[in-house]
Length: 50
Image 1 (tube, helix red, strand yellow):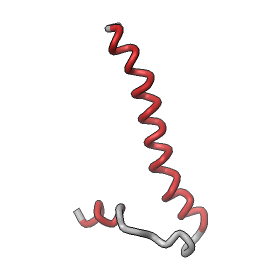
Image 2 (cartoon, rainbow, N blue to C red):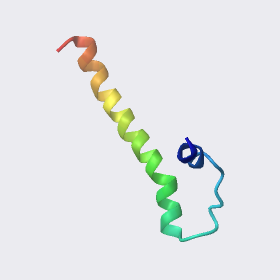
Image 3 (spheres, rainbow, N blue to C red):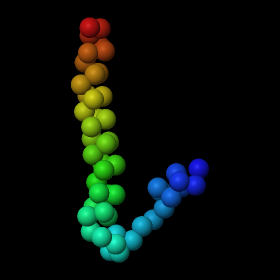
Image 4 (spheres, rainbow, N blue to C red):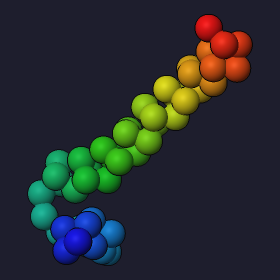
C-alpha cells in the first residue's frame, strides 16, 4: 500500500534527470491511450456479436 501511495504524491518536475521525469509523466498517458484504443476497437465487435 505504501508503494501505491507514492505513485500519487506530488513531485517536483524541475529536479532530477529530465528524461526520467518525462518518462514518469508520459508513460501513464500512453497506457491510457492504448487502453482507450482497445476499447474503441472492441465496442463495435461486441455490439455486433461477432
